[in-house]
Amino acid sequence: MAPSPTVDIIIPTLKRPGNVLVVTDDIRRYTPRRSYRITFVTDEDDAKTNEVIQTLVAGLDVNRIVRSGTFPKKINTAVAVTEGDWVLCCGDDVKFKPGWYEATVEATKLDKAVIGTNDKTPRTRNRDHATAQLVRRDYIEHPGAAWREPGHVFHEGYHHQYADNELCNLAWKRGEWHFADDIVIEHPHPVWGTREWDEVYRLGQSNGLRDKRLFRQRHRLWAKSLTQR
Image 1 (cartoon, rainbow, N blue to C red):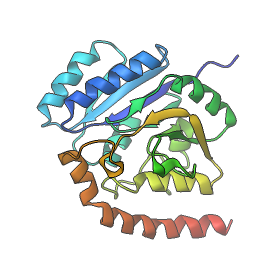
Image 2: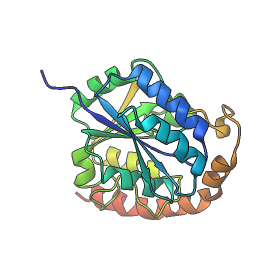
Image 3: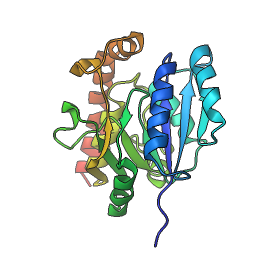
Image 4: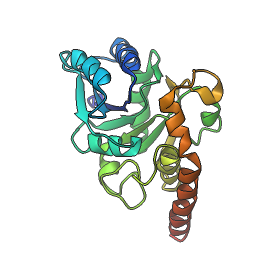
């Protein structure tokens, strides 16, 4: 029997020490020991969040990387220094549900490089998108989960939004996409009226139009290239 996959759960976080505690508790409660490692990526000047994370590091299943910058840059930085079979990219505001890891084990047997998780929002209704994604390590290394960027999960030109659109759409075009209904990692968000607005959400939304334009420009590149194969 093949060993169960190890998952690096990478969570960029900014000025949300309370979220750090909640999401860590969720993961520890619903995930078998030694099958995962949490890596929080924080800004250097985010003193309160860094202090909270340090109290969790003693558990050995939590790591902290200091990398000021955008969500894509933080994810890519953590990917470069972790080594699990799979990478799970998510925010600090998600809610892991019972059975998520067991469902992940089953989904990884399907030989797809990108697995979309069910966040219980309108974004995943069509099963062609996910706001938290499981990405196989060797796919990140080559050809790259971002278009023509080996070693990267996300293109770093995005501020926050649409980086996940590129990851999901590109995987679908390559035949590497699978959506798993039973990997439930909920994503409450003020856009859907399931969480209150704060300064971090407002910051993410503030660059939405620019990120959308960039996605459209880049989408034309891989859509044309992969269609011509």
